[in-house]
Length: 618
Image (tube, rainbow, N blue to C red; front, side, top):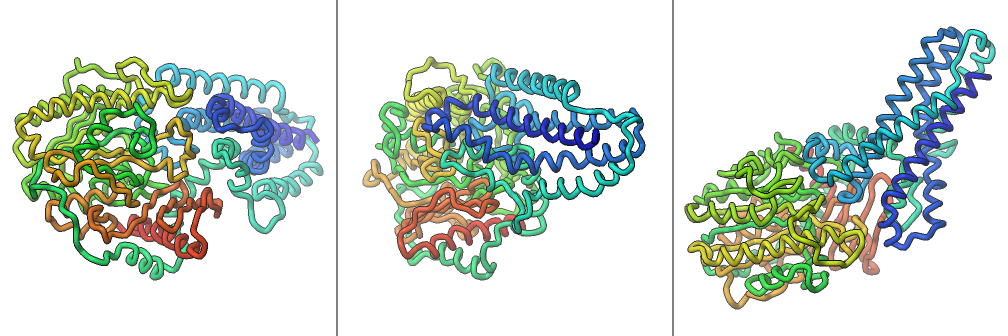
């Protein structure tokens, strides 16, 4: 009887731990939950909908304690009790580490901790710098406190050690026969034909509640298993492969191979400004409010603004692959973490190097994060400068050197740069912890004010940058391309899986843009990975290698946008849009014109299937 009670108490312990860490998450992010208008009943429902997967997770964890207890019931050796203590301590610490890490990453990533995230977390200093010092130490203390209290409670009140006088062979036999079946049913979620999965926890239109309900340990384990499985097989095989390829080929067919040439020269200098986290919601001309980026508003008058551009991914390293390689982001894994595959993709930089361009890349932080540095180096930049390559006295925050000083460094170097050149600056001040050096000016919302003020700061830096750049002799022969690396949560509180969240600005501007085009806005549905084909076409260079990239100035280019949605695909076209989750086999969003459902769904799913297969085949 004692061994059954011991296992039952351990089960109760894990259910309580899951509930308490979930409660911590909901309290920690209560300001965001409140803004979304979540009712108290729906908030409490999180714990109910979480229970089935919590039971499954606890059943997984209890497999080893069951074996330990079974051995003890036959051979009641006292030291075996310590095996249970050690095992529980290791699992508890691991689980709490996962949940505390999720507390830290949710604000930026709006997702659960996954295997893919380990690539980013492999650089602890960058993770530390991305959070405020206060937040970092609060999370560390929370981890230690939860572990100390949790393990003390387990050992003091719940665990029942097995002693010699507890031995009962008959009961041990019954225990050894019945409990495996009980644990098996707990793991698979009962007798139903289809075993339990994470979709069981999804219940709300507020995704933050769904993510809170999903058991963090279960989610991370499933993500890790999937990561190893996909290396042998494409997890996104929705259609026959030949049919999928045909659909994607048709998507890229251009009725007429032509373009509108917007430049007054074929060999301009090119300055690419990649703005950290700038979403469309900070641009007044797209979907933003007045006053967030007034300088950008002025720059629009000197060029062409694309108002319906979507990012293919939600991380900076994914953006680099799209911007320079024209390759869409993939779910589960990032291409920049696979150096062996990078060299097999086309490269905008390598093409420009061959054309005599001097190429450079500037960043005020550490480029090792997300594998960005390896990607840039394989792509052949002549000069790459990161935080370690600048004067140590340059003012900086936790993440790196403030934007105004990095922009000045690039301008200084360009004074002696041979033309033509392509020079890139990747900003960072609008990345958390938003410790930019100016005081707060904007007050749009409680949860994103720091972000909005950091964008306002970078926008102000752009004003000063262009004021100085216009006095340089190379300015009149330079095309400026301004684009965001990815989007960010804003005061408009879009879901991270919505198309509105994934929308960003793209601006082509400068004296090399013909006057007739300046001030124009183009609303065609396009993607960040269309930049390489568009730029090369303007330079009258071959862009045929860039299969996934389209010429934005060809009026006949098809209009659609794809983005990876963590475990699925987001798809936007004139016929409608949808966001599909593979594991759940469900749609987070679907708005498609009547009669177009089959066509639109096949297009989006085929696109992901083919692009992921190409990733595997590289």
